[in-house]
Length: 601
Ligand code: AMP
Image 1 (spheres, protein in one colour):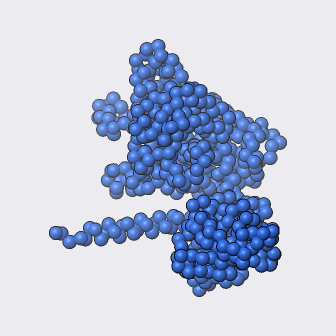
Image 2: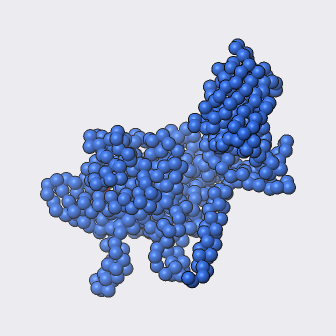
Image 3: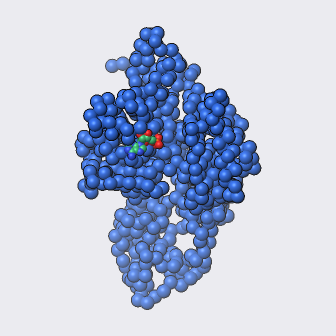
């Protein structure tokens, strides 16, 4: 699927066409677009029309549009329809520099290629799961509700991308990491990415809050605005102009918004330029400290955006005094850090730094293409298509070495019957498990032999054996439970290898496309229509071209849902975690109530 990405700024349009392997086939930018109808400059709509004529013969299967503000209703990427467009329009007052131009670009692109799906990817979406304590302003909640005043956050596409790259850099799963991403460009924001989700971000109800930006003030005491209004010198429009266009680096330095100019002037002793740099760095450092505190720690700090990617001196200044957090800057690496190609990153901390800091080249276009592809695939998926469920009894996978110790030198497994996954088979051979409390005999071996020993049992089996085996993905046996295994020719004590297998679904790549999921995604599967309906959450997707579509659960899980042979389930696109979160929230409300009725002592 070739996805054309259209990224509209207030006076520019960037575009890029990606093929199915994420190769960028063509890209470009049109700048200095007119913002008013009487500007006599090319408008966004006209620019889009020209872009399509330039794309010529290229095949376009979907178009992904970056949209800055989606509000509460559009909290994730979605197909563009009239309802979604109405929401984007409704939020024009909250993003006056962006949403009107995005709408114009969307209309123009839909006219150019009406037959392909168009997807909106929102800057606000990544932050939509922020906890209420982070989205709520401490003002009268009735007023807040009436006027939709809450924190949304922006730059979500860039923060999400940088977080993904940071996880790749430390080679750990995103959902184990605490990250702080700093998108520092003309617009600037910080984000606390806790276990893969945005937990806090510096932009709020509008993209004006937070860090110092090119021409935007970021945080200002709201009392100052009242004073300026009271002074009579400022009306609403003048205040808007002051805070959005005459503040930030430009307002501080008096030299415009380009940090390169400001850094040059500061080196020549320009006092206001120095002040601008110091205020910018100080504010960013404050947010890093605050977010580390909010998350209870930080593993990686990632810099991106025009300033974050290019200004070594600003990065160095921001990271000053953060040794107490475990950040040790490597001056040489920082000076030499260069991220020119996409998917690029550079480390700027020393080997002994407990917290890593990296520079990431932002690639919002690639992120938008990915999201668009996911949305289109999910929309054409057949979510009600049944997924066959196979119930795995306890079984084992053995290495050649262990097999020979149990069954004799030069013994080889004998196939008993083939299994549904191509190349896999059940064997005639069985082994006995000997636990501290009891034993289980006759556990079937599955072939072919593997490179590590892995014994898969159910929770009930664990009670019988008197062991505590962790729930693990197949193949991840490091530090799992020990067990003694017995065969006709000998006994072996395995120091690890005993697991309770995590429920999972094997899928061919074509199935994954159909269902709109990716390898390692977690999904929920509903089993309904029987006596004990159940939704299985945390089901791992495993995609390989050699896999046949099948979900694997163990006997305990099957019994819980009263499943037998020929069972099937359906993939749920609503995340069961969301349901769980609501439950937790309600539970804590109940607790709160209980506390509040505690009798006075
Ligand atoms: P962005 O909005 O992400 O394109 O960032 C634009 C800003 O990045 C410019 O206004 C510059 O202030 C800043 N920038 C770009 N290159 C450099 C550089 N080499 N050194 C310092 N600042 C830079």
